Image (cartoon, rainbow, N blue to C red; front, side, top):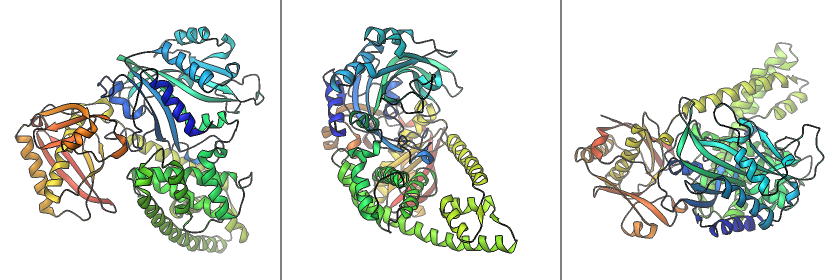
Length: 590
């Protein structure tokens, strides 16, 4: 079964069970600073899991593009990916465990025709936060799963969420397929890293909301959130233990083979898998409006592209190869994700500019390397200091393998163990910094984030009034302290333009305009003049928020009931964040 058939059959199965298909949300979470990227199918649905009515009802299904970068340095093996697709179906306060587990079993064994005797399941073992999930275990037994293939596992294995620091979460029940490998030992079980059991589905029972204080509070609305990875399941269905040998990657790898003259095998496999994963991820991130930079999402994108270039260099790929591989991504995925086709020119342009820039950095790195070697020899030492090796990696993009290779030519050693220690220390600092930076946010619908969200609508319209109708929102990020709004505009705003925008927003606040929400077909909303600049992210039926007669936008919310609640509005900074993209930081105060 192909990936396209898997996506189609999944949607059809749940549509037959009264679910409505919703589009994949962007990789950049809308108005949610709790994470850098959309990490799971449930992430865009957090407001609805918390109880806000969804315009399409209580039963939803889709395939969602996701990006996770916690394990970016593990990519290259047969199991880790940064970008991946997640099939998901949701119950928003409707059905619960019995229906979810029964339908999961039916789809796996009847639609996908997987051998039921090779499926094992896990359930939550219980702890101080939530009880042992005997209900799910009993349902599995009724469906025919023998007790010896039902495993009770702790929270680290059988609890999902929240997507960020706070939000909906709960115990889950996971399904694993035995791919036929021998057990690695007597303790081998589902979840064992040996690869005998492959997780193919996860049903999350979202019964709790994790608070900023770390408490698990029962949700008034019980939800079901399920997930099935497209890449992993496609490999299982095709009897392959290597996701990169399915059609999801063979086009990219085939083009890599043509450009390099090498074959995908044990010696080239790791580098080719890194390049294939990263170029696919980079293309999708660029298509969602992100440009390479040294901060936040732009930094992650730059890191993906530069790792692509580094490992492409190991394969002998010449400058310009990133664009040629990205063309394959657009070709192979454009039918499913049309935003790639729309953004094709931008994808190729960003990759080309970053590749040229990074190659210049590498050349500077070679000069720096020569200085390091000269200093080592002058001091009469036999090894490059670990801090110098790490500087070559962190500043100039030198993988440790390149530093080692070049150093060997000079008869100089590299202490790789010390380098790895510095590298791990750097990882932990970076991860901790991002966790602090993105803690809190809109997921809790706090009073301040709700005010700032409403303020972005006024700001958007005021920018269009002052600068022109070419202005369109490119992204936003809201914390309890400030709003950050990215928009299209070719040049720096004049000071008087900034002040005029601020003045217009405050005028609308003083008028205390009412904020209204209507649910209507997207086509009707567009005909009525509602702003909607995010293309394929919208469904057929949308929420439209109007602020008096001044602003009308398609949006998921939340908002204040009238603009007077905002108090006052002040722009703190206007700056460039990319080619043709400006950013405003602003606050509101009572």
